[in-house]
Length: 154
Image 1 (cartoon, rainbow, N blue to C red):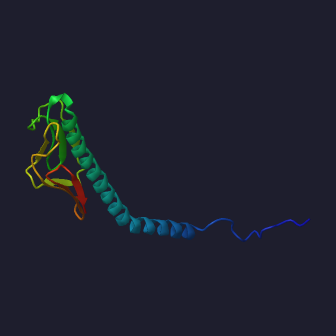
Image 2 (cartoon, one colour):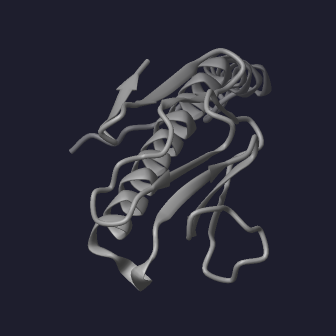
Image 3 (cartoon, rainbow, N blue to C red):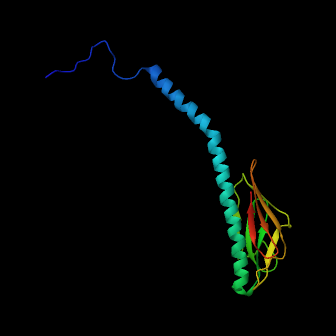
């Protein structure tokens, strides 16, 4: 049987320079990957917020159609939040409001002034127009037609 021996003048392990080189390479890869991560993160926020607003519009319409609390329902749009409300007009103090704040990197805008109210039983909206969800570089839009149908455009 042969024994494996190492020469005493050959070091075992890595040199300090080799370790620094590997750390430098990982650091460089991390710096290069950061813009891709940020773009992915903003796109993900934009997609999920668009889906939340679409869901809120549909929930308000459905609540009006089934006559929840024998009232109309609507959605109030502000630049940094949207609110599902009950009744024919939005009142900030109403305890039945369901407020959803937006992430700071996103902004909301509506072409119809901020409130959309769905009539009881029919679910027909009182206004038509577009809700725009935007970040610094990307925009999504939800178009609401006279029948209450919402189409997403990117």
